[in-house]
Amino acid sequence: MTKEIKMKKIILAMLLLSMSLFAEFKTIDNAAFKKLKKEGVLVIDIRTKGEWKDTGIIEGAHKMTFFSEQGQALLADWFFDLGQLVKDKSEPFIIYCAHASRTSALGQGLMQMGFENVYELKGGIENGWIKAGEKVVKE
Image 1 (cartoon, rainbow, N blue to C red):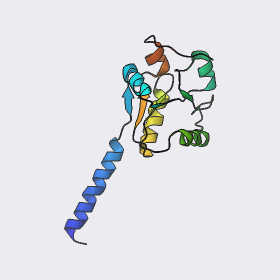
Image 2 (image 1 turned 90 degrees about the vertical axis):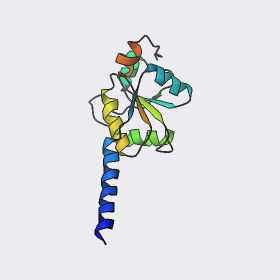
Image 3 (image 1 turned 45 degrees about the horizontal axis):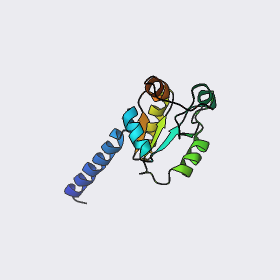
Image 4 (image 1 turned 180 degrees about the vertical axis):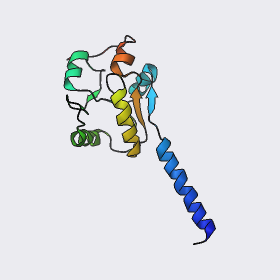
């Protein structure tokens, strides 16, 4: 292999690596959330059952606990459920939790796994949605 071909391969590899390292999921405000939801974008509430009961959920959200009450990631169950709803890694979906801390970690992981259009609700349901006076559905 010539030096020129080696250099092109190295540059291409660095470019691809930098793209994956800097890929970030998108944080959206309530207005953008409502717009995407109205367009049919899937919404997933990743909080625990206790949180759903205490706070309620955003109408139409799919309840898919990502962390147990003890804070352990429920990877197998969650990714199985996600696969039932999201058939293609380019399909957009929105995730939210209480304050957007858990979705931040999960969103970064999903992007590294190749999901292309992952959104999170800014501030989560409590600091972003409810604090702004938006409605929730209680069970």
